[in-house]
Image (cartoon, rainbow, N blue to C red; front, side):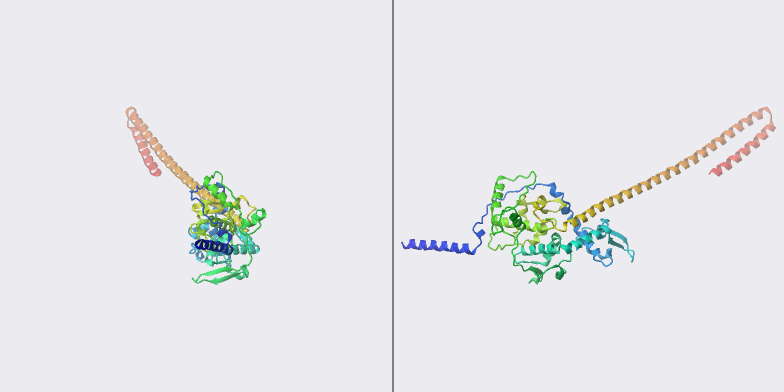
Amino acid sequence: MLFLRRSITRTLEEVLGTRSFLKSSPCYACIQRATYVNVYMKWKKDRSYDSIETIFRSLELRPVTALKNCIARSPDGCIPISEVSKRGRELDVPVKVAKFLRSYPSVFEEFVGPQYNLPWFRLTPKAIEIDKEEKAIYEDQKSDLRLRLKKLILMSRDKRLPVRIVLGVQWYLGLPDDFLKNPEYNLDESFRFLDLEDGDRAIAVDCVETLQSVLQINAMERGECNGGWMEPIAFPFFPSKGLRLKRKISGWLDDFQKLPYISPYEDISDLNPDSDIAEKRVVGVLHELLSLFVEHAAQRKKLLCLKKYLQLPQKFHKAFERHPHIFYLSMKANTCTAILKEAYRDKTSITRHPLSTVRMKYIALMRDSERILKERRFKNCTVSDQSLDSLDTNSESSSSLDADANSDLSSDGHQLESKEKFISLKMSELREEEGGQGYDMLKEEEERVERNGVEEREDNI
């Protein structure tokens, strides 16, 4: 009987302890499980995403805009090559800076400078026009750019990020190069700078309001949720043509869509990193992160610097491979780029970045540069062919002149020989018929002909 009372008391204590745990812990602490089967996901090529020019040309566009900013910031609007020739690594220029500048004649114009005959570069009129438009967008859309930076910082664990991390992704966010250099002009009072213990400088955000992700806002507009906490929001799926998943993976994805959605801006200190709900949280963070970027895409290796600060697992990049209906991995341009499918298949769900139109205009100038270089190469080839033809014509004419001269000399020689033969024949006839007087006259004629022949040969030679 005593043993029964002790067991009942222990059971009540366990139940009460569980109730207290339920009150102090979030709801997802009681429904975490790990049911994902680690099956190989076959990568399927999709040309519709590989042909997006703004994505695979961003590797060239980034150094082009960096050099453009160096020239535009110059008081004279032009710079010598010596000013940027040693900054190739800083500006992400893959080759020599001078060669890179000459590769885009529709953006950069080369001329001889006033000193030492060095090559100088300035922007073309079209590039100047686009640069003015870009600066106007930075001025008009400053609040939008500030909100994108604030969302990135609020997704971090401590609501702060080192400045070097922000500088590493500012190209994807669409921030200008000097955005953090002028905080009084570009940032508001919710941003503040901190000095970290390791000597780094960080930027933090003080925000009381609760932000909602793009996925939550779209689900509320469709009437699928009320904007509450721990609602089962499903990710929009956009399967590529010809992509088929195995049955056990399809079943897991169906259960994955029914799990509660954790916003990237929520605290996850009690979340089991090996559970399915943690997997959904990782996908949600990557979905929100790519929706903030200009091209809604980024090089996969560039996102590794955010792993520690966004509380992502060690192999978070595997989420891109496990969810081919949400993300696409492009292998074009010798790099792996993660693309958010929703941004290109449903353009109304994600707000278009204000800087995307300007970058498209820069890419159009880069295409025009390729046309100009082709025309120059064709013109150079045509000129060289014409010079070769003229050389051949001159050589043919000189050879014909030599042949004519030789033929004239040979004809003159034949004529002299025939005259000599005729005179000798006549001399023999006259010697026989008339005797010495006719012979002496022919002898004089023969000597005169010989003298004239020698003089003609000397003149021709």
